[in-house]
Image (tube, rainbow, N blue to C red):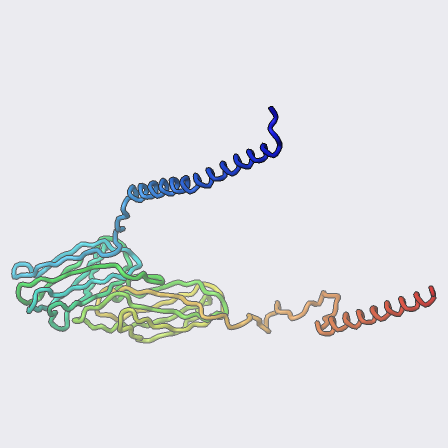
Length: 329
């Protein structure tokens, strides 16, 4: 039996809309199932991820209250410290009504001894005394805390990593001259920055002075400083130096210091290039090209000439069209 065309069209429309409704209804359910599945998988992944441990030498390295008493006036702490960072060594009395004097000594992995702190005044209850220390050598360090006098008391000691240091870092030993090499370009103004990054205990002479010379690639010596002091830690001194030639320069300085070892940072900062490096006495310096066959034409004259030629050509074209039409008529 043949189904009329109108009925067939109606049936097809009904089937189409039914399929469309089913698809629309199923799609959000499918998306919801997919999203739930994805969330479940992500949660599983997060749960299975290992917790990242603090790297050696990073963050807080020591955070503990220690007891100082008659039979134990010295506490020794061992920490691993990374090169190129500043660390803070902080301490405070945490038993009320007590006070004391404290010395702090730091020994680096090579055995160099730094006297980094001696209390000028009595350490009192809950007042923290932070001591910075810029690290030049990575490795295991020893910190010695010594109570010089006082009652039995508790002291909170905290050692933590802070900001990173810029520049080249090295140790200056008392009585040993330092020679620092740097490659510089010609006709450039540099700013050279020197910073003391290790503390000096209060009991010692805080003044750190040095004589500084710079020798250029031609072995010409420039005297920069005589007995220049760097009194405060992390307060750099900067001097400008303009170069006349490219090559290897040597910065040599000798120091006068009470403490045997001091850590120093040097930064070479480019300020500006202040010449075009044109030497009028140089035979290689030529301001023109004798082999050129074309004379120099100023740009204004060149473009003006092109404009005039264009106008003349346009007028000639109009005149030619006029006469051509006139003769044709």
